Length: 132
Image (cartoon, rainbow, N blue to C red):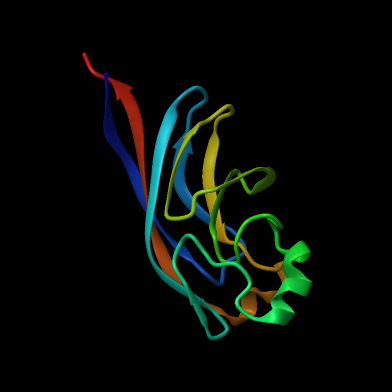
């Protein structure tokens, strides 16, 4: 049996290439990530799960997204601003962390196109702990 303990929350800005959360994750621990809110790519609104290409021309640029296989504007997490540790959070996900580090996040977009993004989503982080 396990229960959830709140670790923290953070506002993730759409325009920031990296959003530092101040939330440190520990190796071997399992976390529940949930997010809510709305952010906008130029004029296309997205929730934290993001969306597939909504316009035909967007498909040409999918391979240039920071995480090419994830939706446009999906909420992405990583440790210490390292893309090699990136994982999709979306609207919610569970993850067991292999390495320690600060949780850093971003909206999945092409690196040079963050200038036309606006809005934010709020991220909530909880850790699973064994019930005593």
